[in-house]
Amino acid sequence: MTVRVSKYSFFSVVFLFSILLFFLKIDFIYEMKNESSPRVLGESNENGFSDSSGKNFLKSYGKDNFFLPDTNKNIEFVPVKKKDVQDIKIWSKASVAIDVDSGTILHYDNGRKKTQVASLTKIMTAILIVENVPNLEKETVISKEALWVPGTVVGCPMSGFCNSNRLYAGEKISIRNILHAMLLNSANDAAKSLAIHISGAEEKFVDMMNAKVKELGLKDTHFCTSSGLEIDEQEQNCYSSAYDMARIASYSLQYDLIWDIMRIDEEKIYSSDGKYMHQLKNTDILLGEMENCLGGKTGFTPLAGKSLLTATVDETKKHRVVAVILDDPDRWGDMRRLTQWIFDSYDWRRY
Image 1 (cartoon, rainbow, N blue to C red):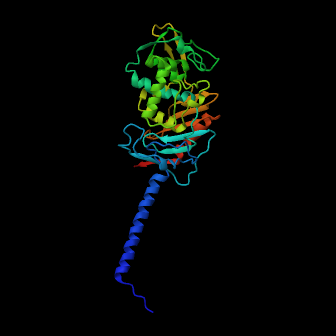
Image 2 (cartoon, rainbow, N blue to C red):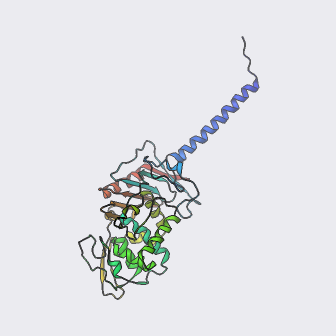
């Protein structure tokens, strides 16, 4: 029996096959461009993901709340993971690394776990100071209330160990100097002094912090204090996540002043009348060890554990990365390994 196939049937098959190949090609290009390096472009109501690459963010984040100012208009480069690269595993309870300019997730491990972040909180405090104080040379008067804080304070880089003058009630000092004390020394009294100067009471300043959280579209963060200290019996209400802190730090990079301060190794600051000198020492030991470090912030409370936030730049000085590790007993070693792994594992390509 002879089977006859019309020329129209043949051309129909060829046409359908061509259409199939076209869509397969489009899908392949999309996967190559997006799956290996997901961009986080909006909000999520989910509490966390288990995958280390962060790919699940693509399923839950929209495109109408990109968190970095104006970068969604002119993204020039995006990082793409090299072939056959295995993700890194570090000791932290949660960790995230993102490319600042594109929002691409470079590393993700439990990044949206809500937890205490201790003094990493001070980056948000610094943002509000820079945005709300036009003249940083303006004086503030240190109040007794501001000095009633535990932990690290000006003059005492470690709780119980003091090597310089503490702040004094009634001391007049510039906002700039107190900002330096907060970011370098991680001084809790400096943070509270700034909060009181801006809002009259720390509680009102915390309201400003949480309003900024909402403005930035952060879903895993609720601040309780300007310093990051937890409030007794309300610890569960004081939290952020590695991912949210990476977003806050990325946002703060538009303010050179904040990161210029965090790159200072040590310095002396003085009261306005020159009567009191306060010695400051940066708590971030990676500054002198990593040439590509743009600055960072340490954090520790017994509840939060040891945490670290660092901004680095690649060898071309064009591509910035923010990495956050929370509750890590080897935060220094793990941050070195994580940042090295990132620049070894990714190439930046034109978008």
